[in-house]
Image (cartoon, rainbow, N blue to C red):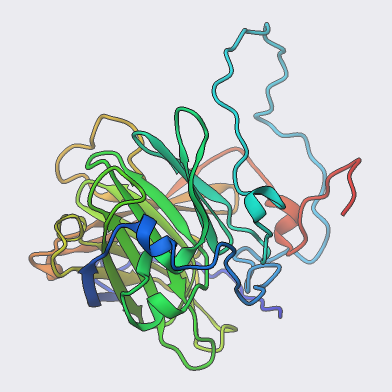
Length: 345
């Protein structure tokens, strides 16, 4: 399947344009994940997914990119430094712990918590001891997070998973989408742990998105869990633009009813990446979340201020263009992957 779109200039926008308040379908609190996982197959079976994304967000120029010298390439060789290697152990790999990849791309991601490391590949995840590397749970089907929840978050295991660790609250955040091409509905399933134990209980939520919510990304910010999606029509071939959403973090940590506030963008904006607080110093109170994507030799910065009490006060502003050294997108923006020398296919 192939699709092409053309980037058009984006002019100053109404900071409230495209806003939508999305209420949860339902929420609950689960049994411990270690108990739910015991009822799931050890190897998640899912329909083989696409080998490349439905739509390349930055179209090719039609000709091969010219080879140029990178103007910011470091040309000075610095002295070697010594380093002490930390713990090294096998994660979820082909043939490891009985795991076999079932889709491409594999959407490999993982995150370190207080005492554990969780990795999610394709439609399976595993929990490891951070100190020893010992396997504590899995590989287990991703929809184990919503086992017993009911609805399509429980019955579907469609992938595009994200596992995050909310360092401010010492909680795990797991999410994946539900896709029904052609008919809908399209859901985002979210589970927030009640403790710092990834195998414990979770506050579980499902949200119905208005269109096909492809390529989800998520960042943790003090006032919300921020998401971005590349939105397509129900058939999956018409690109509608990026959607930037904020889910009510405080409500989800407490296990109460939660909403998402979203700002649908035009097709000129795509593949947004939300800011994520990874350190220990929190942003200034009221600091908006930031979203970033790239254009021709530049980055585009947008700001999301959310107000769950009065949604009409929420704003999404930008973009501010940040000029950077000239660059060419990988493979000139084509659906071809980067070639590796000296290896087989």
